[in-house]
Image (cartoon, rainbow, N blue to C red; front, side, top):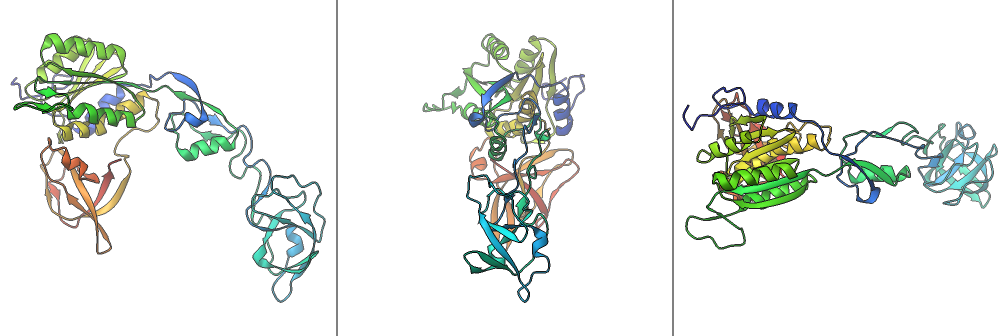
Length: 421
């Protein structure tokens, strides 16, 4: 078999379909993150470790959703501008106070938005539908039904119902819900430990001035940032020579210290054997995938040591970051306990393609695009460039996917643009 050919874990030659490779990877993984108890105020973006039940009703008591008067709905029946009903003002509900008196028939309580309903009151008439007669009486010029302009106890969420499921990534609104329920601490999954290293004797630190033949280390800084965005604790093992005596020990150390390990530059044709041998040297199951039908990102290497996935990403930055988005992030989310398989669930927006894009059938193409608003249409312009051109990513708002059966997309095609975060 020539060095340019690839084989999968069963020894079959050829490139694996992207979705097949993704499912093969995820089928080998389970959540491995331990559980810790943390304060609610530092829980943003963490993953819930278990189902969270509401310890009480929210709200606990009926409240007004409008400024107006708390009434018995039956007292307003048939009220109109031509035939209003008259109600005596029994008192006022002050914010933050519990009404002490029950509402009597033919009476009302002045109430503000958020005020607690007095006992026996079942609805609220808005100020706009009342006319003051004097300091003690109002006219009601529009009737209300029972429960109008009121949020009942438990209308937001009822006691002992599921507030948040297990495996849920906490958003600001979720923290607000838990705060409303009086929950101050929450069990979450610990952060995934993510190890990254770059290979190649031509790679130098990004802060250095490159001499001819040398290139700055773009991938480590960019991929580490992608991992941190997913909540990982990142360890950068630096630049490692692509000689076996240096590379093998570095990979072994990274695997022993992390939940996920990524190296870049070692999955291209020149060094693919070294990356494959390094993974296989760690033990079973070894290499799962070596090469996928994807542009950019074809030469990705995916392996496994025990329950630790190892990724050899292409050296070109666009290819490396694309492979991270499609494969590494999906693995990290599953290991972290997030209950959503990452199959193109990135935030997306509909647009119209501005130019023809050719594509080879049998390959999934990821095409970077820039969005422009033209004549009340959102148009997607392809951002063309080589897979080593990092500026094409910076100039792009997102990407579109050309699926394997297609031979490209035509101008004015409706497309879904997956937005870069």
